Image (tube, rainbow, N blue to C red; front, side):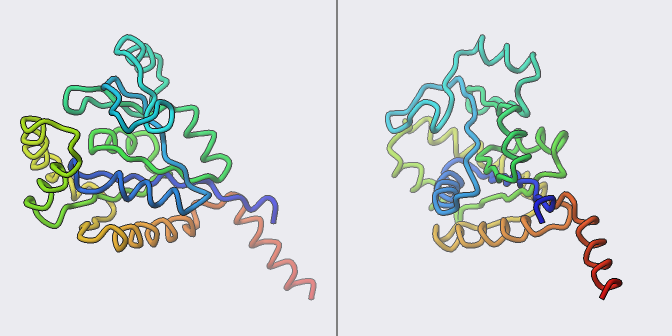
Length: 213
C-alpha cells in the first residue's frame, strides 16, 4: 500500500476578529501531529505574546510587495490596515507529503485560495453566539484600544456577510465543542476519495486477487 498515498488537506478557518478561530486553530493542531498551522507573513507590529516565525513571519512592506509581485504568495490581503500572505512553497511541500495545513485567515484570503487551490481545500466559517459576547471576547484580550475594538466590530458585520461562501459554519458557543466539530469535519475531509493517489490501481489489485482466488 506504499503507493496509496493521501494528499494533505488545506483546512481553512475564518471568522470575525474575536469569534474564536485562532483559539480553535491552536487547539486543533496542538492535539493532532499530522496538521500544522500555516504561518503567514505580515507587515503588522508583533504583539507582546507573539513569537516571530511561530505565530507569523513579521516583515516590512517592501519585502511583502516583493514576495507578492514575484508570485511567492498563494494569497494576500489587507486587514485592518496591515498586509498578510501565505508562502506558496511551504504549502505545496506539506500537501505532497500528506500533511494537513490549517489556515487561520479572513474571507479575502479564502477567496484567493479558492481560485488556485480549491481541490485541496475545506472551508469553515466561525460565528460568535452574539455580538455582545464578541465584544466581551475582544475586551478580554486586552490587546486593542477602544477605538480598535469598535472598528473590529464594524468590520465583523461585513465579514459575516461572507458566511455562505464556506463549506461549513460553526457557532462558537463553547470552545471545546467547537474544536470537536472542526475535528469531525477534518476527519471526513481526510477520507475523501479525491485525496488518495494510486487508489484506482489499489482497487484493480484487489479485483485481481479475487480473480486469482
